[in-house]
Length: 173
Image 1 (tube, helix red, strand yellow):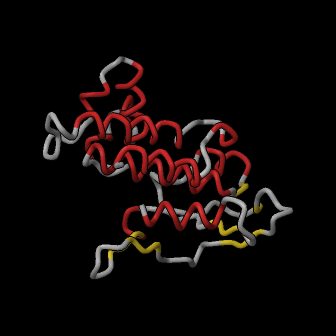
Image 2 (cartoon, rainbow, N blue to C red):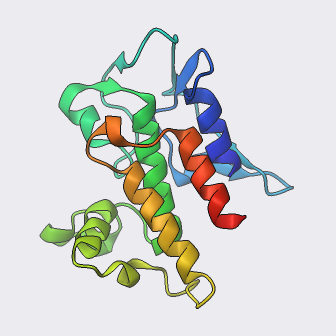
């Protein structure tokens, strides 16, 4: 939640906005109190409240880069939302975004595999069996739905990080 809180602070109404551009699991560390800390700001960009994006070269880590970066080379806060959605998928599935199980053509990556399963009404099949039980299943399915919203093809339809934080709090409260 702390990671989501940081992202919502940096991209939802506070100026200047920070576009991290490399949100991934290995850039979220836990301190001795298990509080999440977002690290590695080498690719980050600041934008003013008047700006909607930063035009730039493609930056980030394969599997977490939003599709629009390759199409128009514009970084936005909604790109960080996409990357956070990939992290949620990792938590729910127990799989890495570009793991070896995704080498087959129809399952090129974690996002594609999950969406394919959801389209076939097989969302239960993507849940990590090592943490799945009767009590965790409803929460995991809700997280999967939030992740899917974060991973929308159209950046404008993705939720803000502030909204994602609210949805995650609703799950755990």
